[in-house]
Image (cartoon, rainbow, N blue to C red):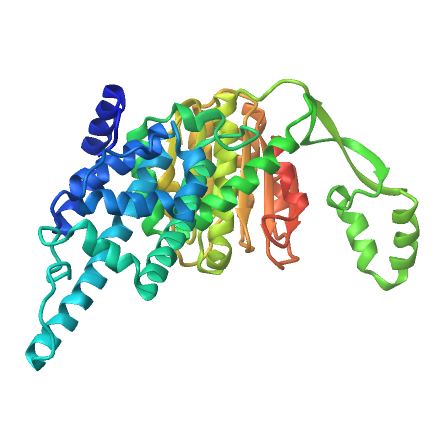
Length: 455
């Protein structure tokens, strides 16, 4: 055990053990005496930075000495000190390595000894491992295992693999929880209860797709922070026309001229010189008070972009949380996934609700009126000056009656709608009839899509 154990650190460990049941699972899985003490001492060493061990001839001391001497432990130690999440994740995974390694190599030693005994070619020395249970393991027997080149190489490789996973999961937790803070460890993540952080870490550890979504969310939050740096940003609300060469703001007539053979050359000259007609924009000096509504296409054709897209949506959620705006997530395909519609008052959401948004997926065809009709329900109950972001890769008919009804409510509530047309579909369909702007992007990292982060 550790020398100079601190009572407050011991109490913290007991609280974590009650909240994080993976430790008890390990103790039940690996039937070695004193495995619970091994886990406790490892956690306290990581969290407190204290690695001084009591002088004793025991298997636990031998294992801890090897763990403390490993490169994986040394790389992790500074960051883990005082960090409950990182200390807990590292203890979980490193203890797992110890259990798996003991199982593998004590079993191998037992089989070899049994075979030699059956052949009558060997007697069992007092210091040879004879069973896969720690009741028979001694420090000398473990030293013998660590002196075995194959066993030592396997130990180091397993720890290195787990170190990579621990660091990645801890980073992913931060990606999902830190809001729009500028760097790791800042912002909202520190305000989330440790129990919820650990529950999220468990989900990430077993779900590679969720880890990818977390990575994308982290990237898009950084992008969103830079996009929102200025106090005054252009909104998508059109205010007359001007001239310039911002391709995403060109008038439809200019797009037509760019494609027609008889006017293409003239268009190119005017575009290069900044003389093409494009929409002008109003300035918004105050944050919108209305809801932030996101209609997200989950049809079958969006499946390949869904991981990236969910990261984009989580970044939009972080904006709503920072500004304390209601956030409405409306997934749709051939119809709205009504059971998956999420409403977060003042942008507040739990870890479970965040995971529900990330895991949402419907599949099927495409229907624009159903999600927009659902958006209208929330517009009716929202304060004015809100925003709708409509994300799709497809094209769908919208009836004239619905267009008139939708635009009337949008005007009444002073909402703006931005449509992001993702992928290689060049046809806007009727989206311009209900949108202040339709932005075409090939993928969510396209810089033109960052306009959604300025709403």
